[in-house]
Amino acid sequence: MAAAEHYLDGKGGFLASSIGKKIVMAVTGTILFLFVTVHMLGNMQAYLGPHAFNAYAELLHTSLHGAGIWIFRSVLLVAVLLHAWAALSLTLDNMKARPKGYREQQLWSATWASRTMRYSGVVLALFIIYHLLHLTTGQVHPSFQPGNAYANFVNGFSQVGASLFYIVAQLCLGLHLWHGIWSFTQTFGWAHPRYNKLRRTVATVFAVAIVLGNISFPIAVLCGVIR
Image (cartoon, rainbow, N blue to C red; front, side, top):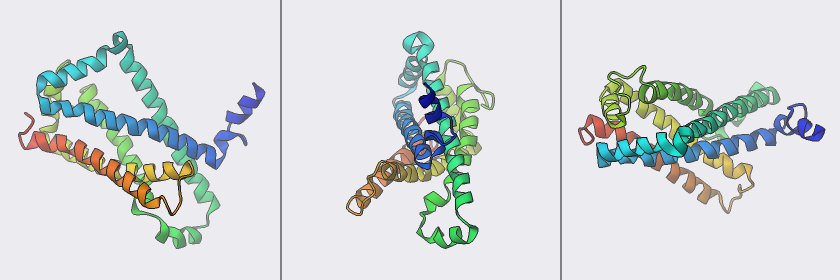
């Protein structure tokens, strides 16, 4: 028991180490990646019309007699908090370990996605809060109808400002996903010249697919394809 506490207490244990924080980032990032993928695929039901989309929303809210959605949300909340903690902690550790001049000299080797990771993360954090208030609880929705997910979806994205913010957030998500997938494979030892092209291709394909899928929703609503 004492050993386990030392392992997780952050005082020289697993969570205090750089590799420990990177593993936390990778595991929680994987959970969040699976969520955004499933979420995007689920929202594709909107193209099938109100009955299919509302049935999908009803399934989510009634799974395990209503407990499923709360278990799901709890896991996501823990994953988001741990992911944010690990990211902030690693950033602070890097700032302490590297003098300013050294960091400036090394920027040439960093990808644009990695250099903007913290900023895209902030945008995504703000977007998550807005998205929940917009399409889940309805506080910032122009005409929220409890139990009518399809109408909320269409009416919400009919607002140009909301759709633009959604699109910008998805572009940030794409950068975040690309660098996240790249870093995940590096953390688990798959960084090798032989595999780097494959890693880059996989990261690009997944990031582009999710971004295009997600931004198609507000565009389809604004163009009248989904109405």
